[in-house]
Image (cartoon, rainbow, N blue to C red; front, side, top):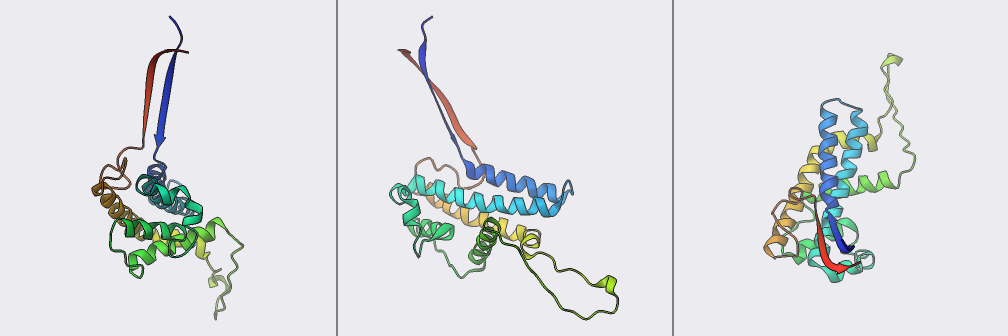
Length: 200
């Protein structure tokens, strides 16, 4: 039998993987299967990564011109950074987005925290307080490492709500390859093989 040509293709929806990682890490955190600070911190970073990856996926699907020059286009106000991408998508999809609303401010806090984690510096804290018994004096807790456990549910809920609103609008607008109204459910990717009768 003569050798022929096969073409394999694959697309992996990385936003889906980040979201699954976050949910799994948060679940492990609640079951005490590991260090909750490590699991919640890593899980929250995955939420931030999922939101940006989903925005990028939608931009590629429905705004190819702007996405082709992503670094330049999303480097100036009012569309700077991930929050700017979300704002741009909301405008393009005609979704009302109140940047002053609690849910948007929640995402803003998430990305400020993400930036502080990714571009980390030594966190120095000092607290002065009266005491009677030296054994009861507590060392200040890291703000960066305690935030995930305190805010993960809020960040998760608000991120999913905005991503779902964008996803649903993109599906209604018939953007390429956008199927389903939920941003973080469905296919993890697409794979296929095409066989040819053409000799190698």
